[in-house]
Amino acid sequence: MDRKLIVGQNNEPASEPTSTLVLTTGESRYIDIRIFRSREGEPDLPNEGGPLDRLEWAFAGVSHSELKEGEKLINLWHRLDEPPLEDKGDLYQQPDGTTLEVGAMVNPRTGLMTQYQELWEEPLVECTGNDKKRLCICLTVDNPSLHTRGVVVRVGQWCEGIIRVGDEVSIERWKWVPKGQKIIAEGTTAEGDWERQAKIGRIFLPCALTFVKERVEVGNTVEVGGLTWDAMEKYEW
Image 1 (cartoon, rainbow, N blue to C red):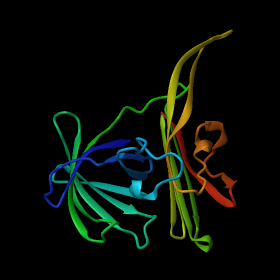
Image 2 (image 1 turned 180 degrees about the vertical axis):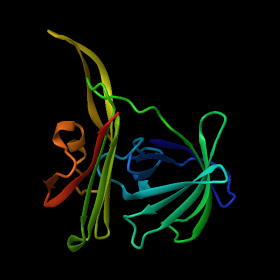
Image 3 (image 1 turned 45 degrees about the horizontal axis):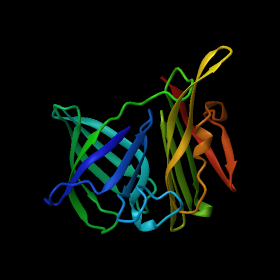
């Protein structure tokens, strides 16, 4: 799990105009959603389906990394883009624990190859509710006949989803929010709930399936809104 702190492109002054969260599974499937920060009169994050121009970009795929002269080189292949785009960056650990990524990619908005530098932090992955272990789940849908691809990834207390049907894209971001403890006959139980942090687009995403681990088993399929979602990953640590 990574949160972007700052970005600079083509030697422009560094800043961070988005709320960006990347979730990556143990098998290197990832989802990367970047939402522009609010303008005057807007909510911090859009949560009722729009406006679409608040979404800088969102993509998902499978990452591949290898060592290069003692540093880590990571290649990200964006499955939801047509045609797939390649994003290569060199990662450099910083003394404060953050990671500096330096690379180049085709900017989905401009279509131009863009040099960039991004500073990332890795937030702590937490257990939710009364679970004693942290949980990761990945669901995917891929239906060429319906021109549909989608990914939902949960890592600990965060879940994000993206789906593309034709030219229409929808995204969601959820977070488990603890709300103290409740005393019961057996002792205490953790109180809290999953709260949607952002929603852009009108297509339904089955993020809630990942909130209860018993609902998902690897290899199973789930029918949601006329689409078949495959359970690709589920593990605890």
